[in-house]
Image (cartoon, rainbow, N blue to C red; front, side, top):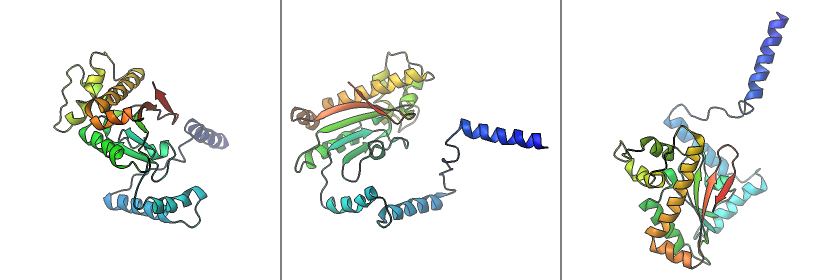
Length: 232
């Protein structure tokens, strides 16, 4: 009996040793829509509560006050909509610091370009944003979907073409395997390159901003390490 007990304890210890996040990653999915909304509202209540917060959190109230009538972000970030890649958290920025545009696959959609143009043209007091980051990420589902459709390059659903048709040119002729992580990483980086090129090609506002000092920075985010690495 004692031997079986020790074996059980060892098995449990081994399980937790193999998965150190097991006890820190509870199921965050509420049971239904009402519970999900309550979780968001409770979170908003925590966010708005100033008392008993860390000094950095107290800055939220200050930031809300000083950005009430205007915003002056120092950078623009075009990133994927993936829930694992929130730019404000990834770059540890606060309210008013970065103007974030998110679309699946971080593609140069009309809406994304229009949003970036707005930030450049209208958020320019006292100075316009000087940095535009195109942020791709590890295991991007949109890029993987595009790879799986090669070489036919024909999206199967009505709305998907608005995203995938903007990714196909980046991977066309590359002979990449969506089942190989290195190939997916290469495809993600190629997609970042294409997006960065198309932003300037499609938008006179962005082109002019580039001559006035705006810089487009291509970057890649690792889901595993949390590191953002620049791409030249």
